[in-house]
Amino acid sequence: MIDIKGLTKQADNKLILRGIDLSIKQGETVAILGPNGAGKSTLLKVLSTLIKPTTGQVMINGLNLKKNQLEIKKLFGYLPHSSLLYDQYSPLENLVFFGELYGVNNPEKRATELVKEVGLSFFLNEPVKNFSRGMIQRIAIARAIVHEPRILYLDEPHTGLDQGAIAILNNVIVSMKVKGTTTIMVTHDFKQAAEICDRILIMKNGKIVDDFKLKERNLDLLNDKYQLQVEGVS
Ligand SMILES: Nc1ncnc2c1ncn2[C@@H]1O[C@H](COP(=O)(O)OP(=O)(O)OP(=O)(O)O)[C@@H](O)[C@H]1O
Ligand SMILES: [Mg+2]
Image (cartoon, rainbow, N blue to C red; front, side):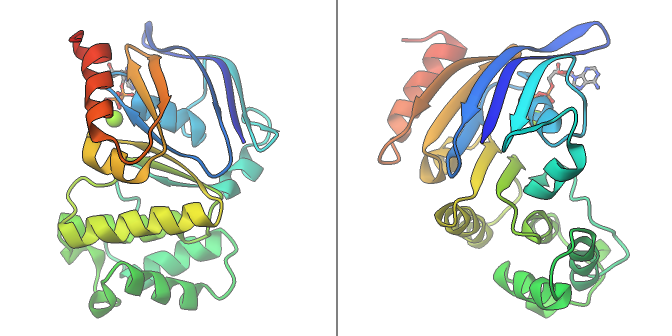
């Protein structure tokens, strides 16, 4: 479903991604871990067509990222650090807007359901600008999935969420996985990575330095592998 070969990204004479080769199958939930500045968000930005690769090839569902941006954009939902929401508008207005953009059937119904799903029905018509960080993140999650994407790119999605919202987000990811959605999640939260992901990538200095399957939410294995790769402790 996602095939990356020899991907590099250079900006300001700095090589941010230094040759990424990666293949991800439909329905996998993949966590990308790594220290600050490793290039994790940059990789997600390339995949979500926000920035262009310098070299290499990216194929998504058989479509070339360079040539089929419009088709590819319909396939994924992207949750970056910024919410991408319109401040002066309510959750309902925001989600209807994005729903219409993606050609969702009956966007108002979908928007109302999603706001309920993220536990903010009470605030359906309040402007987002009055919301707390966690509330905004809940609506941003709803925005990312409004068109029921086949692929989800999440950049530190658990940041700022309370326990209830963490459970909601994890449920969203797991229930989308059941439907065959592929998820790539950048995170510093190892516990959540172990909780929902079945494959772990570790990035360091613009490269993937480890790539392994995780079974039975084995947080200890994840910690050990990370320490070995990133901190050089065995
Ligand atoms: N547009 C840009 N121009 C120049 N350098 C950039 C640009 N975008 C990112 N970088 C640099 O690329 C490196 C990787 O950044 P990136 O945001 O991908 O890291 P990250 O792994 O997501 O880190 P974090 O865990 O802190 O979010 C950093 O050194 C950053 O300064
Ligand atoms: Mg980042």
